[in-house]
Image (tube, rainbow, N blue to C red; front, side, top):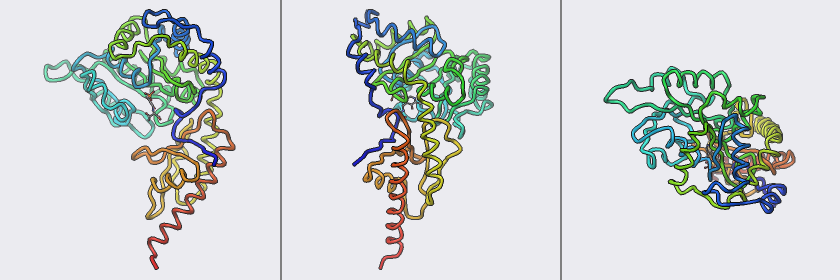
Length: 354
Ligand code: TLP
């Protein structure tokens, strides 16, 4: 049976060019700063997001954690969206490992936080209050590119109050593609940014944390502390270089496929599709049929070879990525239609027992 795995762009496999580059990679001990492939990756990663220096880390989670550890001390406060990845999907690592207090501001449906609420969350210099040190932004958020005007205004507000800004830009190249600008422009006003090689860019692992030289020097120290000092890791970094060189331009294909998917799903009875929010590679939908749940649909789809994910109150998430063709999207649409018919029949049978 053909499988179309739409759970996440993390399921991508490295391209042939990546595997070849990994095989041939020149390596050294990166904890001594002697891996030439890592050094090259860190340089081009920083350049790609318009920052002075970069640090290769194991994962997006590690990149965000190191950024927060570097920006904040024990007991300091970070302002962060209530529906951000840092809050929802990183096990509260900033509090558990960093003793940093997350001050949550509600994330709006477009991925922003209201700036008046951000302003009100900045603590005064008061003996009762934690010291607010950092504002965290996320772009894209749930596949939604956050506008440049907002990015600038949020950063200006933070900087006017002596806060730094960290951007969780796990999918910053998707944001840049959708906004029609460079990743450097998206991150321009942020002090630091983390982006992933292992999502839409299809590398097997790794993220880059980028910022100014002093910040990266400190983050490099902290990376060793959290056990992220790696050795001949040029073997992995080589794939990251190929990712930046060959995978950025093609993200537009994933966005086009997500649009085809969203439009096809919108024509199906029994689904609520958040189609107008599809600007990059993610489609969110909910089952809208009495007696049927999102899990019912996902289970039927999986039996038919189409794998999706469930994202709590956001419903079912389907993500297009490298390795998913327009033909795969059409196959997914067909199988989702069939799955819907099946769960519909079952719901009718349950409500009309004979
Ligand atoms: N997101 C994963 C899961 O953790 C949900 C996914 O499939 O989307 N920031 C953002 C915005 C992310 O979406 C992710 C991964 C991360 C950080 C963490 O990256 P990793 O998984 O490399 O630690």
